[in-house]
Length: 136
Image (cartoon, rainbow, N blue to C red; front, side):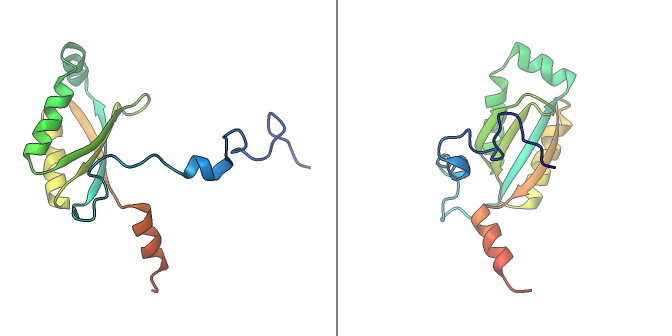
């Protein structure tokens, strides 16, 4: 017995013009992201504002950009940043010279008491695919 999904289609991508291939094809990367001459590792930082952080952003939302400038002064670069709805308030894509530099940055930002972060290293999908093709 098979159950048809709502709308009668079994292809979840059907509603998108061009199907799955069109959805998977992404927008161009932000300037500076994926440049061959810039080999700095990439990290995705998810952040959640604390009560103190929410008060600060409510009263001074431009503070977000000031913090991004401070990140740049520490030798890292903010590639992209988005405000989120849900469990996290922001996702920030950061390039840092090393894991150690990213650890230090995350600790320094968290020590202020305005955000809690989770940071993940990220590699371009093409690099991941190439690594998966390597023999054991």
